[in-house]
Length: 345
Image (cartoon, rainbow, N blue to C red; front, top):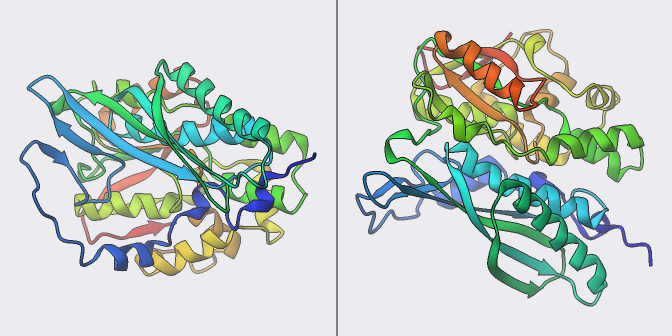
């Protein structure tokens, strides 16, 4: 039986995320109760994970991430979902220690062999990260869902939040943009084998440098780019840090195949929802094309690290990223004094 996993998905990967504006409305009246002093990071700035101080030397980093298939191959789906979930640990500067599987599968539609391949893909990435899948939970649902609860450790004084950027910091992006566009092309049957290989290469590469960037005093803020796109996650840094950001579009690392597709009008519905949620806080050049806007808002499943660091730390951060195989990592802009807005030139 030829099973195409994406036929079960109304949206795939991080494109499944609830739109920013809707999420804000949902959480607006959620009371913050029983917040212990040991909770270093909670929900206050929409950070990548919660951080709880255990003692003077250790804090636990806890996060969960799961979604519906972004690709048809079950093994690749498992790998992508696991990489994406573990990324939130690295985005806080943590070192992963174990994971729990989150599994929801339509048992009447998917053969057990396909489900086993999804789980095997996730386990392979956990093995690459040096952690076990120590348990989890599974249910029978209408759409395939897979992901992880990921746990890690970090020194309490070395936690990197999305709210610590300084005026004058340079902004560095670790992976190129365009994964969401490639996924849209895949669902339309237009993605070439080369394009698919590019998509898998980026979405299954662990953001391991995050655990080493915490040792650099010049690194002030850290997050990863996922479902809200580059613009959305950079705006989170702006809001948390009470600063503006300026980005030069020509400096953005882009996946060439994705640029070609988006110029032909191929993009995700999540990109449009993202713009509706935060577009009022983004300034584009008067002659900007719609395809440029789509790349800025493109949901990145298992996207790259987004770093705000002092100018004197720029070369060290780039060396760390390039040395770990993130060849496209580069400086894309600067943090500046001003209201929480993104200026694209």
